[in-house]
View 1 (cartoon, rainbow, N blue to C red):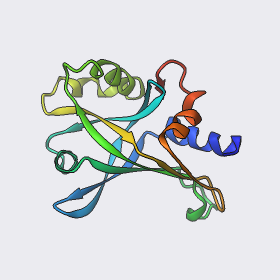
View 2: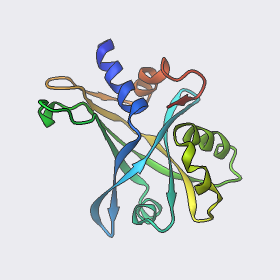
View 3: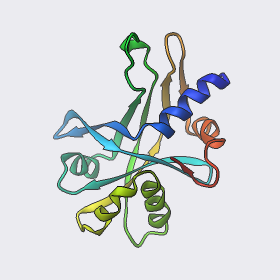
View 4: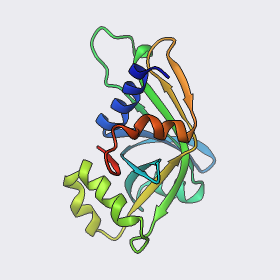
Length: 167
């Protein structure tokens, strides 16, 4: 993958704050919007979100943890929607209990990107969810599509993740 294409991927995951989450809802496809942050631990990226048990997508992830996130570049006047950069990240969602050793670093990653969400952590019905990508499909524009395995995704994000967090 060319450096400029890697830069597109980095920008999408660092600069965008919401993704479309695809789940199975009662056996049918469903999509919702979730805020996310990227956490890298042990060299592998994890997408972190914080969800309410009241949300349908939370119940969907509990029933079937295979999900997919779609992150797109913002629309700009005069740009064809088909040429917008985007990355699709199929993965597996795991709920992280407050007493789990990964909870504190994942929470810190999430709050670094969404400091106004701190009060939500005081509510008992919210949970941290770590989505581990199984691959990534990046479309950086016309004729610039790439499929990445998790290790290649981690390598592409490495230079933007000093320490453990991409914001």
